[in-house]
Length: 320
Image 1: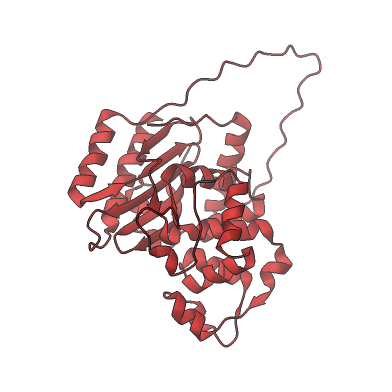
Image 2: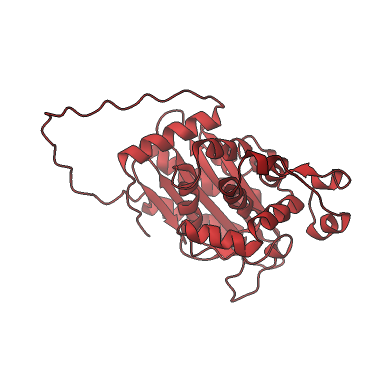
């Protein structure tokens, strides 16, 4: 088990406000904090304390049971942004990220572009669609193209493969995204290929893999304002919200009333989901759940991801 340092109070407040507004499609100006009195006596800050660890024996047993039941390897990294509490299971082991990478690619694009860039129409060929595979939106617009903004949304909301490849092109290819992630402190995720090659892992290679801890940390940076501006953050969270692709994954395992903005991924025996989860009250929870079946010939099962999310988020809820 690992422990991550609790975020500052200022950052947590901004995160909760930003996520709550984005997921409910509201926009309310925040009030400025009152200036400190010039005559106020400074109050010593308390000594830092270790962030709580939610990995109880019962939680560990539940996760191990799921691995046995589904004959799978399960990764989990959870950060409760309010308390700093963490829950990790195989958090530093590598997993193929599949299409869950698309959320991070689009985050990098939003950070690197302005409105004029996003309104520019991109074009592609039928051959590119055929090579990329699953492309529900771009396959319908080979003749006329689409604005980069719509391609970015399609990559996240519909998991359109050609859309991801076009986003990667804007970033300078997979290496460009890899560099963008490294600039945000993620030197673990290894972006080497676009679609569909990113789904084909080579044993012993780190190419097209990440760890649960790395994805959770990067997702937290996306949402807490360290990486994206407020409007870009709200746009990304909107695109990650209410998508049918995630209905049977983390969203299915979340407590009633908890809102989930997610990006799924899946290929062969790999099934992943990463999400920002906002309870009715309290601060957001960042969660990454990558899974892979032990049998190379087996196909993934959404129910496994949902069950892992239920165990994890129930532990978070119980600790609040």
